[in-house]
Structure formats: C-alpha cells, structure tokens
Length: 135
Image (cartoon, rainbow, N blue to C red; front, side):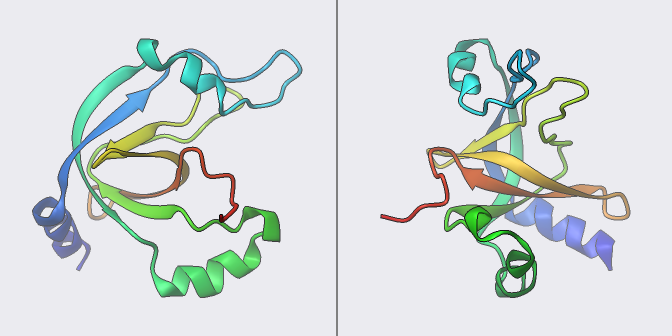
C-alpha cells in the first residue's frame, strides 16, 4: 500500500528548491532565532528536488491542531511529500530547519514524518513570514 503512495508522490511532484544552512541559528543565550536564516540566505545551499506541496487534510485540522496550544494554530501550513530527506531544526546539532520553495512561496519545515516503507518523507511546513496571525 505504501509503495503505491510513493508512486503517487512521484507522479504528483513538481520542481522545488530546498534551502539548507550549515551554520547554526541558535543565539548565544540558547534560544532559536528563525529570522537569522534570512541573513544567511546567500550562504544557503540550494538543492533542486521534486515535491508535492498540499494543504493539510481536514483530519489534521480537527485532531492534531486541537492538541496544539492556541498560539500555534496557523493558517499558512502545508503538507510536503518528497523522496528527499528534509530536516527540522536541531538544538543539539545547532542546525536550522530546511526551507522549501515552490511556486514563489517559501515554507520552513516544522514537523517530519519519514516513511521508510514507502521511501518518502511527509513533512509539515509553515509559510515564512506567517506568525500564526491572520489579517
């Protein structure tokens, strides 16, 4: 069943760019600075991949978002399916989260769910510049 999902991902994927930073985004006081990535934009590795970027399912909105604090609810979240190994930020390693750009919109990877059975990664991304607020 999951092998079929991998085939669907291959068929529905479109070109995208992953931005990966090798420098840490952690400040000296131990807090993460997501905006620090903007300063490193020119130093980021740009990796051409294919990915399927979709809105989250209604079930995620109903089940998973209810478990999150109200401040974490966002309107600009997407689900990303790809065969490329994406990464989130890691405090121990001092690495910043990958960012993926498709169709001129850039998303920071917030949650990963690798699927070894289907050899693909399911990730959630947040639109960069969105702080969970609507206008």
